[in-house]
Amino acid sequence: MVEWMLFGLGAALIAAGLFFVLSAHVGIWRFRYALDRMHAAALGDTMGLLLIILGLCVRSGAQWLTLRLLLIVLFWWIASPVSSHLIARLDITVDAEPEAHMQVKLGEAVRREVDI
Image (cartoon, rainbow, N blue to C red; front, side):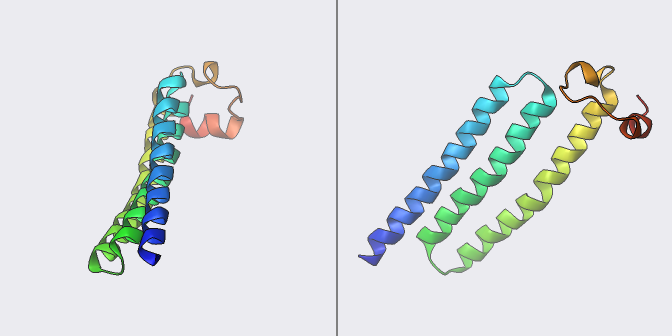
C-alpha cells in the first residue's frame, strides 16, 4: 500500500513538473519581447526541474542517487537565475530602444547605469 502511495506521489510530482515545463514552452512562443520570453523560460524550467527531480527522488527512495539529484537541483537553482540576469542585462544594454518594448518605462537611475 505504501509503495502505491509513493508511486502516486512521484507520478503527481513528475506530472506537475511537466506541466510547468510545457507552460514555459508555451510562454516562450507566445510572448514577443525577449525579456518576457526569458522570464517564462527561467521560471518554468526552474520549478519544472524541481518538481520532476523531487518526483524522481520519491521514486528512488533514500539512496545516493537522491543526494545527487538534489545536488543537481541546487546547482540549477544557483546557475539559472544568474544566467537569466546576465542575458537580461545584455538585452537591455544592446537594445537601442528598450522602452518601445516595455509597458513600464525605465527610470533615470537605470538609464545612467546602462548608458542608454
